[in-house]
Image (cartoon, rainbow, N blue to C red; front, side):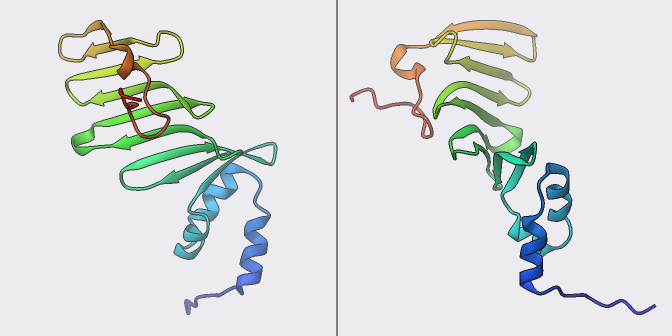
Length: 150
């Protein structure tokens, strides 16, 4: 049997891709070929045929946005399995999770207890509560800590 590549005109490809209205089909379409993967690089999450979230991927981070282009979550990957995960509400960071492999997991919930950090030590299985000084308790929505001068 002779194996041939079939090339669809770009207009037909655009039409097909515009008809995708569910997350499962969107994910499957990304696997069809490299060209479709590039066209669908931003992952869309659907609910009732409407886009509710967008996910962007890079080697060092994953960003999640809502349909109004407001950031919902951000995960930054570092060396040796370390990562830092931020959760946002109205573009304000409300929680961070800092994973240091084989050492500890740090969680800061800015919404409920703004200057309290929970540190779980994996080696000895202990949970410790640490007070954070106020200027460092509220990070900038995307960048990190706010300037203590301004």
